[in-house]
Length: 504
Image (tube, rainbow, N blue to C red; front, side, top):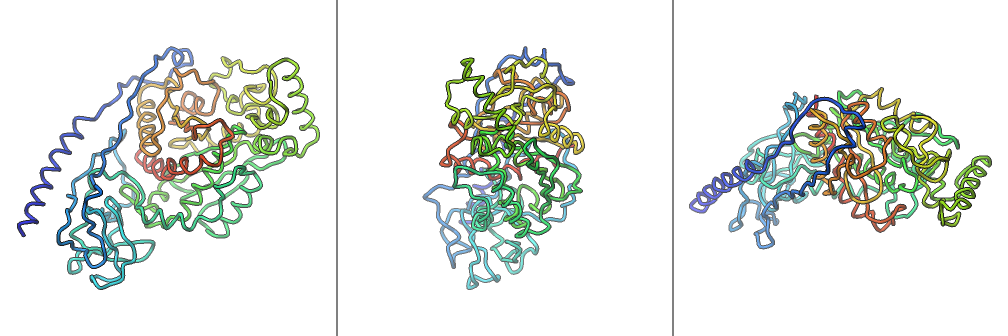
């Protein structure tokens, strides 16, 4: 009894200290109003932002494990106090999300057994860690709470569960849920160097067979060389909010396609009763659907991976060869034909798709003729691939959009937007940075090329957007980089959806 009182006094002390710390750390960016023209965006001065890391939960190596079998209550261990975490700054008030009946609880000790029955003699189904969150279906059965775990009802000792988010615990899916999901991931091969269009198509068919009704897939366009441009919808297709994620718009950056396909499989493998933030994944993706364009430039990717052999049309192959000969003759490339094609960024028409959007199109000069990169095309949206993104973006009017590129492990977002749009974009980037810890850059001042999808989304359409650059090497990235890239981006869909559902 004396020991419990000591712990209670410590908990109050911890709560006060943490509350003071969190109160003193908040910063808000000044607001102005409206969208601004390209000329204003060019004049923005560079702003340096220091990275802020989240506090460590304080579970040290010397802390007693309270979750070993037969010790659910704990006789001598130190209990981490169930302190409320930092309030999350939101741009607009959080609407009623339709999940108010879900009772979410958090593990407030270093480890905690989840048992088949409310007894210390019962089988241990799994072991939860500090900060893990679960849906509670029944409260206080002789000191035990009933929780949902992978669709199964389990029991945990109620004393070590907190109804409030514990200090230092980030929004994430509980470790045991993610470990179980990863064990099920056997379709998308993330260990190989080349992830091709044909392999992606095969993976989509296999995933449809394994997870019927969990996602939809349709072709929304066709490329010059006859490949389909796929749109995948994950979550409730009638959801109030949508987010767009696109990858593979630059040919040699094809690991981005591999990443988003692995993300799709991961979220298909995660149980819908797994908790993220204040709701379950099932509830989250019922409110927010993901519209994924996993390989925007399949022709260009085939060129980067297989050279001229990657193109079906003889006339297109001839054009590509003639562009190389011209660039070689004019001293614009020192590459061999093999390397010229390996580092290809454009589509099969020799157009850099991420320079084919109308915001900044007139100002961007780039290359004068079709080739491996930097040719913007004859007009904004002149290419089938960019036209699809423009059309579907306008039809969907998403809450936000994210583009995956390679490389640099940075985040671009600042195109000179102002007012509430800038505030929302900045808050979204903070969420992204909180997941992958990529360095935040300012695209309007870091001399990024204009006429990209991200520029157009923000400055022409008023849609919050960010570009996530993965990896650190030169694209095509080496397969050895994928594990770190995955660790940085595993939680991205849940984080983006959780942010989107708070936006009006």
